[in-house]
Amino acid sequence: MSPHEAIEKPYKALINLERYWEKMHQKEPEIFSIGDHVRVKHEGNVFKKAHRENFSSNVYRIGKVIKPFDKLRSYRYVVEGIPDRIFNYNELIKTEEPVTIKVAAALQKRDRLQKQAARELEDLIPVRIQPARTRAQQKKLKVRPKGTFSHIEIPRRKMPGAERPIPAGMPRR
Image 1 (cartoon, rainbow, N blue to C red):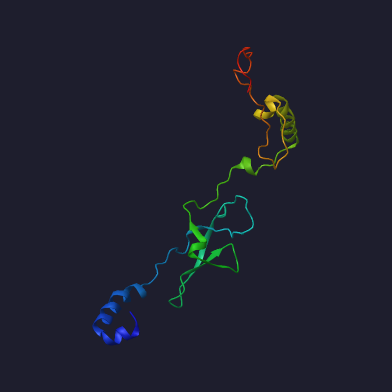
Image 2 (cartoon, one colour):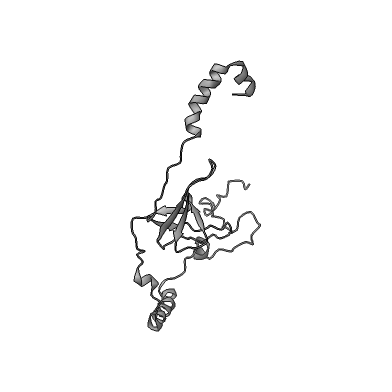
């Protein structure tokens, strides 16, 4: 509603104000409380294309909740174990487990024998598995250089009728 419409139609302006007043001045609920276990979101990088977990594997506790001091801000949280940083609600995720559980085998480094066995396995694999061949390689066809209409030269098939001799009375074309 424009200011001119509000002056001309004060009753509609009053109804509009009552309708949207509650939405504008709602208090934001406190999402996390002191002592909750949370994980911290990793900061993404635009130029890195590798797979990485969205949230850290470490579990932290919320030490302090900072209330918003104006209508534009939301609750902010101080996490125990990460000094000099304040988090918003969208940078944290609540977890049920208070302790991080990791597989011990993933953390354990490979010893000399495991590395040697892996190298021997890599050496054996090319011997057993033959590289895949294309149809052109199987038929041993000539390959044209790229940039031509077709990359593979396909031999012309002989016509089934061309093998028969032409009778003497028939004219040749």
